[in-house]
Image (cartoon, rainbow, N blue to C red):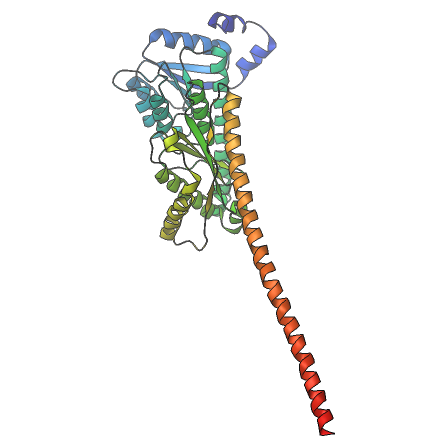
Length: 378
């Protein structure tokens, strides 16, 4: 969609008026090209959903951020800028408490994988390459708005919990199915950022990426047996172990909920193989031993699935296939254990039967001997 088309489409209409009257998302755009800044500002302001500010350098952006009484809701950052590039600026913004979870979208001409990786590791939420389509950008910003709303609801819930003086573990409660963010782990992304990263790899036609799912063995039961804070600590242990096991800078990982992690690696030589299961569980065991836990956490590794796709749905399909693989492997492992136990029972039962028959036979012999002795005495 062209910029002029986007602008003309906003003239008149009750929906446009309603959009303008709604709360606007405050967006800061940072780019050293003045023409790009003016183009984006005009286009986004015309859409009616955004209150746009601009800065032509990282230093100017930080000054503007520092001067705000009300925080910005979202950032659009170019990467290639003098003095301070967009990736460094992203890292700086993540140091601010109010911007720890704010959507940061990289809007750049840099499409090489190393820049994509560096941006997401620095804390980027999404990545859009120039030239961009206005409708696609608006869609990405719409997703960013939803992310802001979710974080706002979460913050409100925590505030209420604190007000009611509930225990710390209550504040940390989350559902077993929730895809929570694991903090403090190198190359660990939130699940939204992880999906955006995978889709960006697909858009760049990088078909040598593989995704592998890792599942907590008996995760649902473990979640039910221990506190929320202990389960969160266990997730952190697993993420830490996975980060150590996949040392390549080309790998990223994320927790998607339901006791399942996803790991994406680049190149067949860096695939996380199923044979690493023992090593992974040893690493997890070491980390748990340091915390002196009274429970055991083990994980199962599924098959690697190639993310070869040209579409968003194809990329997400690869993630689902990886999950299906580890689910099937987990089920097969449990069936093997059940079968082994049954075989062991079946092997014991004939012995028990032989013992009972032997005892019965001995009892009959003893009875006959006693009868012979009584007859002899007569």
